[in-house]
Image (cartoon, rainbow, N blue to C red; front, side):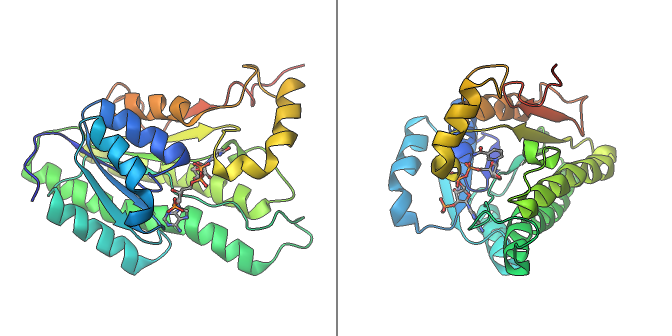
Length: 261
Ligand SMILES: NC(=O)c1ccc[n+]([C@@H]2O[C@H](COP(=O)([O-])OP(=O)(O)OC[C@H]3O[C@@H](n4cnc5c(N)ncnc54)[C@H](OP(=O)(O)O)[C@@H]3O)[C@@H](O)[C@H]2O)c1
């Protein structure tokens, strides 16, 4: 087991995009890091080295967040390596493989997106919450514990060509409320970070579309969001700066969803 007094953060989908932005910020703030993803460890040597260079111990837990067996083995690996977990960032997520109108989109795509984006984080949160409660009851670390869910403006902004994604993200909103309500008695706050249009691989296929929309005033802050914008918000929550704000949604969308005339 790794010998370190640092708190530990587990970021699903932490080797690129928004998850990597969160992992870098948490490593900078003094957390040891566990990240998850689908790719082989040999393919993510670069981000792992970058996190180590920030002073963190880093553990990689490969596996599909939608699979119960994979979730079990990720948590077993973290327990074996660090023996504790203070912060879970439910970030891993997928877009539909093909954007299709809701009058045509397939059940297969619904199962894939909802299975990865809601079912996975929901049951991972269940397992992690039980482990956090155990840790708190033994007062092993006396530290701060929290669960942070990466949702999306798609929880409330309808895109009729990716309905399954919107439904999944509205599910993340209720998942945040549910776990915040349930974990209150243990003083484990649960939050949702709700990003807007963010520059990552997920949005690389729609760059021109959003460049034009942003130029036209889509966001109040006239630029794309970057993974670092979300990382800074996650870091602040993970440090306990909002410990009396459980269940809240923190918008990181450049004002995209502000009602305007
Ligand atoms: N980009 C945006 O504009 C935007 C806006 C709002 C919300 N979000 C949300 O932010 C989160 C991160 O998005 P992103 O833009 O950073 O996406 P991304 O660049 O496509 O990265 C997705 C990450 O999730 C991992 N992942 C995908 N499916 C997985 C699975 N089944 N099991 C485990 N890991 C899996 C990937 O692992 P590998 O690297 O191993 O493939 C990757 O690390 C998602 O929940 C997304 O819905 C994104």
